[in-house]
Image (tube, rainbow, N blue to C red; front, side, top):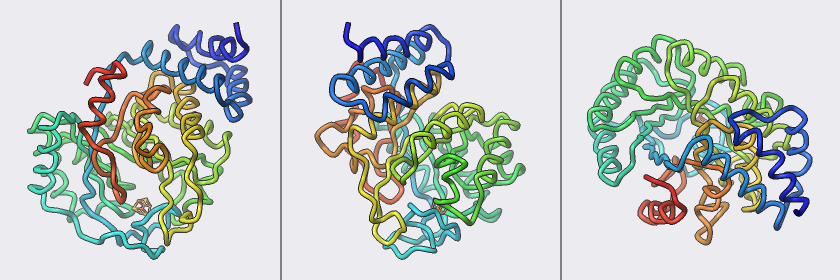
Length: 330
Ligand code: SF4
């Protein structure tokens, strides 16, 4: 038995049996994974894929989003094309009419996508637009889809209003670790973001929260983010890879290599064995056209399809055919 097979088998054994990684095994993973390549990386990816099958089964969850309000954001997230602090060519428009949002959701439903998220730029959706959002959520729910929303740091009463309209899950990324977050955003705090997740938990709203990788964070930051998401009760974890956008402070960073991105997916599967890992923005930037579904063989079980917020996605039909070939059910 090779060393790489021994390590991946040893680390995955308790996870396959329904447990979580011990602190000692977490340290072993963090020592090996950043340097793993070739057969060792492939063995760890196979182990992560086996954990996914054992803990979550073979169903792949597809979701799509609409950018319902774009640009003019007062926050200064260093990666974001929509921040008013940066000079980019991102479009600017106010909240779309609910009928337009529901029509976009229905088109995705007809194409076999079960979840649809409404995303708005800004620190928090203002009260005046909240009722439009609630109408759209009710309309999407009536189509037989799960309606999700991402409207920033909303207060309790606004989240409760969306829940009463049929909200299936609230999306709010923590983006990165508590320690690294001030390097990414200074107009709001990590604690502000965490408070949103706490409110959702208290109100019984399922939490979708993850991060963006490739911003210069360390492996310790990546592991700390996973631990915080675990403790916050996030059930769906979006994994985004940086698409460097000219005009933003991170516009000059090189994209992650495919191997580095795959190591991140493996890390999250080992640290979050029972959570849904959803590959979202940056997939085409990192994996290109040659291996767009590679992260789905390294522990992920969900995909965002169609276009992302400010970048283009892949082809839905190609993704569906590829997932079926990998043994996923849709
Ligand atoms: S990520 Fe969201 S909050 Fe941050 S600048 Fe972009 S739109 Fe604003």
